[in-house]
Each structure stands twice: as C-alpha cells, then as structure tokens.
Amino acid sequence: MSDVRIRPMQVDDVPAAERLSAEAFLDVDRRSARRSWPEPELRATSRAATWIARTEHVLRTDPGGCWVAESEGEMIGFATSTVRETMWILATYAVRPGLQGAGIGKPLLEAALHHGRGCLRAMLSSSSDPRAVRRYHAAGFSLHPQMFLRGRVDRSVLPVVEKVREGTTSDIDLMDSLDRRTRGAAHGVDHAFMLQHWRLLVSDSTTGSGYAYAFPEGGLALLAADNRLTAARLLWTVLADGPEEAGVAHLTAANQWAIDVGIAARLDLHTEGYLALRAMAPPTPYVHNGALL
Ligand SMILES: CC(C)(COP(=O)(O)OP(=O)(O)OC[C@H]1O[C@@H](n2cnc3c(N)ncnc32)[C@H](O)[C@@H]1OP(=O)(O)O)[C@@H](O)C(=O)NCCC(=O)NCCS
Image 1 (spheres, rainbow, N blue to C red):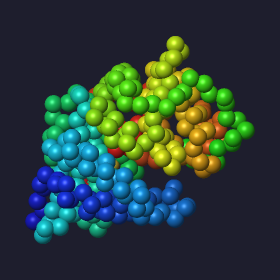
Image 2: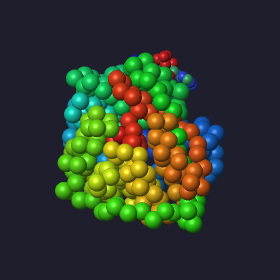
Image 3: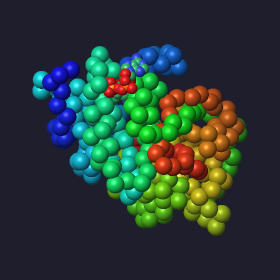
C-alpha cells in the first residue's frame, strides 16, 4: 500500500484498535489447528472493556510507545509498547486481516521499538502467526516456545496451602523487587492497573517471597517468586480458588515447577506461541503476562 501513514496513537483510537485486534486474533485462532475446538469467538464485551482499560493505561504511561498505521483516514494497524526501567515490552501489535503480509507491520514495529532504544532488555509474547515470528526474529529477538495448561482441576489432589494471603498496595515494593530479581525490571506503574482489575495473592515468609495476580474469572495473570516452592504454592492457590475449567498460559521450559503443578492437578499441556527476548534468558520462577509481560 502506498498511502500508509504511521502516526502516534491517540486515546480516541483505542476502541477502534480493540476491534481491530479482536478481529486479527480471531483470524490467528481460526488458522491455528489447536484452536479448532471450541469454535474460536470474537472477544467478549467484558474482555473488550479490560483490553481498552489496559491500552488506555499503556497509552497514558508511554505515549511514545504507541503507534497507528492509517490509510485514507482509517486505522489499518497499530503497535503499543512500554518501557519499565531498563526493559522494553511490546503490549499488542496487529494489522487488519486481509492487509497483513504487505509490509505495514514492519514500520509499525520499528516505531514502537524506537521507544525502547535506551533499554538493555526487551520481551514480548508472540502469537504463532509466522508473520509475527518473522518480524520479531528480524528485530533481534530469540524465540522460546510457550506452553499452556488447560483442563478440569482434580480437586481431590489440591494440597493444603499455607502462607498465602491477599495482597494490597503495600506489597508493591516487594513485588517490584521480585520482578527485578526474576525478569530484570519492575512492573512499577502497572501495579495500579493490575490491582484495580485482578486479584493479588502474596506469599512472604521465612521460606521465600512471591506474588501472583489472578483474573477475576480465574486463571493466572502473572506470577513472580524467589523460589520454586513459593511459586508452586501461589499457583496451587490460584487453581484451588478458580473455576472447574482452568487455564494457565505463558509457561516456558524454564518453569518446569509450573508444569509439575499443572500435571499434578490433571490439566493437559499444550504449546502456543513464543516468549521473545532480547539480551535475557527466560525468567524463572516467573509466569509472564501476555501484554504487560
Ligand atoms: C504480526 C503482524 C502485526 C505483522 O504485520 P504485517 O503487516 O503482516 O507484517 P509485514 O508484512 O511487515 O511482515 C510480515 C513478514 O512475514 C512474511 N509473510 C507474509 N505472509 C506470510 C505467510 N503467510 N507466512 C509466513 N510469512 C509471511 C513477509 O514476507 C514479511 O517478512 P519479510 O519482511 O522477511 O519479507 C500481522 O501479520 C498480524 O496482525 N498478525 C495477526 C495478529 C498477530 O499475530 N499479532 C502479533 C501479536 S504478538
């Protein structure tokens, strides 16, 4: 396309970006054999509202990391990214289905990457779309396969878990220090968003420290700990408090402790996408979030 303009994202663009991303990811799901059952669906209204709130948060904290591709006054793609301490993070990246593979994504990703030019490290969670994988590889990212667990939790094997409590804003310093130890950079201002939308669990005892955020509908959103025992304790709590049908996404081979928990809970293990990293190894014990990593 010849008339494509790359420009900074504005807050008014966010609802259109949400619909574009929902359509692009539905298209990825449909192309993926793994997702053939259940039938892939367009993102539900409740999840769309959280997507919009998260993107508004990212745009507020990192206006220089959020870019739109436009043609004839219409959004045809976008990329949103953040810088947290010395880390660049890609939150979302999509081009309208039907226009993909024509070179629109390349300058969008370059604009977002420019926001992180002073960073030492970078991370993002890649879909299985071969176009996305090509872009990230060309941008110097190493690719680490992601696994996910899904199934019905066997309640008869749930262990008695102690030393896990509800977290509050007073845990932010502890969480930032765990993030620095595991992934090399704190989440900082992201905790305001996460505390508002997700449930926080904290374990802080003589045997170790860790935290986990759980989605309101159940399922793990993010987890960091200073040892595997504490990490496993937190994951067991998320599974015990969650619905019958559980899902745990974004597991890397560096986090076998999470696979151990999931298999013990009788969940099934599958693969999906990649954790893409620059200048770092897959964090552990750590389960990243798909957008805030
Ligand atoms: C990922 C995405 C944003 C990239 O945007 P794009 O406009 O398609 O990207 P570009 O056209 O600039 O680059 C795509 C690359 O894949 C190649 N490509 C095109 N069609 C392809 C196909 N069917 N299979 C494999 N590679 C393909 C292109 O040649 C290009 O590689 P090259 O620069 O080495 O030649 C877009 O494809 C998309 O929205 N995908 C679905 C959503 C998604 O997965 N987003 C990423 C989230 S992590």
